[in-house]
Length: 213
Ligand SMILES: [Zn+2]
Image 1 (cartoon, rainbow, N blue to C red):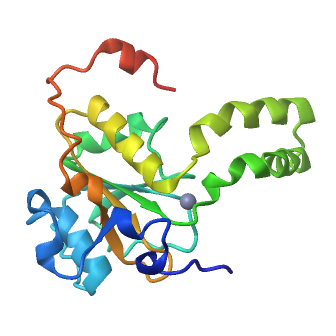
Image 2 (tube, rainbow, N blue to C red; image 1 turned 90 degrees about the vertical axis):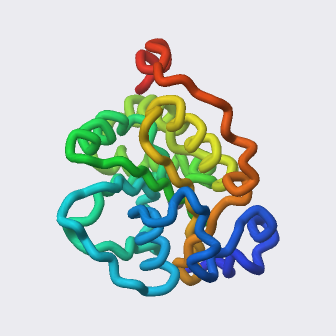
């Protein structure tokens, strides 16, 4: 299976990401939170101590080349193609009931969803193979592709981060990017540059909610 080059040497990503080589590289607002525990586990092999209470929800891609380094009784997990949460807001709401306060969204390099438009006919064929009528399969794939296809992994992560902030005003949301070469987590530089912090009020406009898929 194809493993892409490390992010550090990949010119598509390397200047857009901040490596986490020590605890000091973790943004201050994430220290002493489950976000820090996840990063320390993934990048330095520190074992995660579960409090027995789920405080964090992790959303990432279905990608089989990436395995989350988490023990049981630690986190809720949503895995969907591209890692975007859109369409799973109900699942987020359910985890809030159980005490979740942090949402980590993890993008990755070489995501299949950046090439899925080219592969859409193969997905249609796969559904036909399962007994679907071709026209119905094609309509379904056309409808779903807009929720799953992405142009660029980091841009898609940024857009989903901004969207989620408008929908969930109290959750602490941490966007991270994982290198499929060595599973190390990186921080997008746009988070550190702090140019994404428009003040959002407490109230979510209902038209945003009504438009959710
Ligand atoms: Zn992916």
